[in-house]
Amino acid sequence: MLYSITQLDTSLFFAIHSLAGRGIIGDFLIIFFGKYFIYVVFALFAYAAYRAHRKQKSTAAFRPYFGALIAASVAYGVANAIRFFYHHPRPFITFPISHLLTDASYSFPSVHTIVLFSLAMATYFFNKRFSYFIFAAGIVVGVARVAGGVHYPSDILGGIVLGIATSSILHWLYTKTRFSRRSRRYA
Image (cartoon, rainbow, N blue to C red):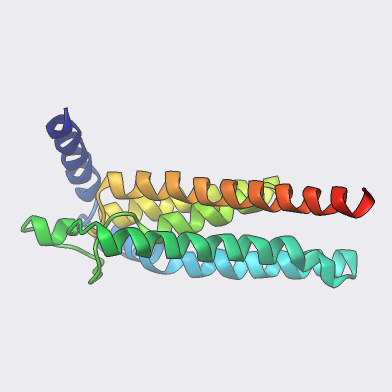
């Protein structure tokens, strides 16, 4: 069973990675989305927080955006904690392939994906429309990182699941403690 999953993961990797090396424009897009697009997403996130602040004319408008950034930071820590204990080599180290992107750390889970999906899930709780954009950006970044040769599809899937789980758990803890503090105050 495990062999079949590993074989499927490797087959999917080579299918997606075959998109690389077909032309200058395609390679540019893989590099841009796999390496730099995350910065565009965070810049747009900052702009959305600024717009919310201008619309509400209150610093309280920053609170949910700040919470989403905390969730993304926790997800970053989760990814690095997993990599500390689980050493999964990157595809370009395992296979003799060319790669457009490079990274010196281990591959599971994808930090780019876990951070973007954690940010998207945390944003979902207060701005659904914008969260859909971040979810889509996470998928595009994940596919680009597989095509660039630095991740297996399982690394991306693991980042998606862990990012969503991290923000969901943090949101649950926040609402539970927030409501329990309110109930104690009025008791």
